[in-house]
Length: 382
Image (cartoon, rainbow, N blue to C red; front, side, top):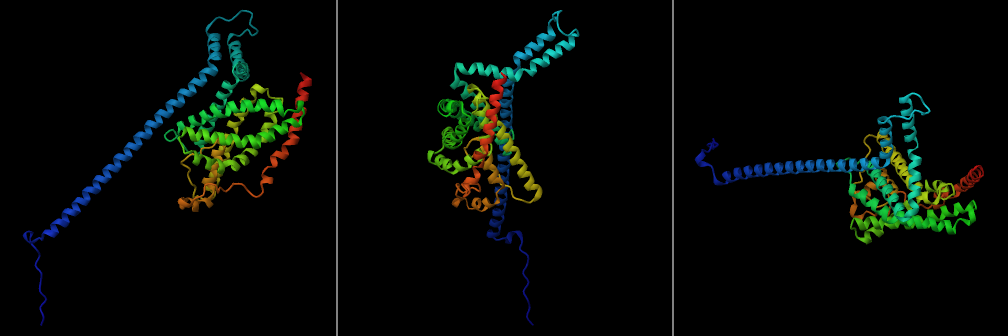
């Protein structure tokens, strides 16, 4: 009979040196893991503290700007209203009740605030048209970029006010002064002695040659302010030229039927265009956000991409490009293979049916003629 030998349990003195080294290695690995976790926790805490600091700074900057703008717009009327309630009223006032008279005058002052502001602007522009129109575009492009960032899901912690400032600077340097001279040139050369079709030729020129030039100029200015490589900026310009035109044609031909008519004085044309720019950015943001919510409501598991880097285009096109990249699932494969991704291949790049995309440029002519008839009616009434 074979006897199976029994192995006695080793005592402490019998432990081999290799076993002790293995135990020490495990202990060292646990220590390193604990150190790594503590470092990761410190990094997360630093990020949270930095985001909180950014939130406070952004909030302070926005509050300062809002208060400054509100003061400039309202301080005269507010001081008048305060004086109205502070001092004794004249005896020959049209309303006997003191309170009713004060409230009526206060409401009248506030109701006339918009038209008074426009008249004040119109009085300032002739003194230095280039500067004041540059300021107008600077404000409009700053607000437009801020709205586009809000659509992209930015909060006070993540909103890039420097990007909005660069957009405003591009509007100040490029859009305002250039559009001033462009509009003056069109009034001198494309008005055709006040003929109704002159407005149509102005719109065609603005929405083709000028729109391409202005988009390229804006992109180069934004790229220069961000210290980007000019070659990369030029690639973006070529990739976004057609999307910019197509996005523009959906709104601006009909707006410019009024912009380039005689209903809007020359000194107020850029103010009108910049105000409509903010309206258009807001509309695009609302539509794009509704599309994203509709996609998620239809399929809660649908993948919605997030754009974390600006495209370097004007605010309206920024929203269009963001919407495309967020909602177009066909771009997923490109993004997964980022090394081979072609930025020029967007889902709404230059289509084969370019003529059908330009239908607003044909549909605007009856509207232009109707606007011309309104001009004639107003001129006869005055």
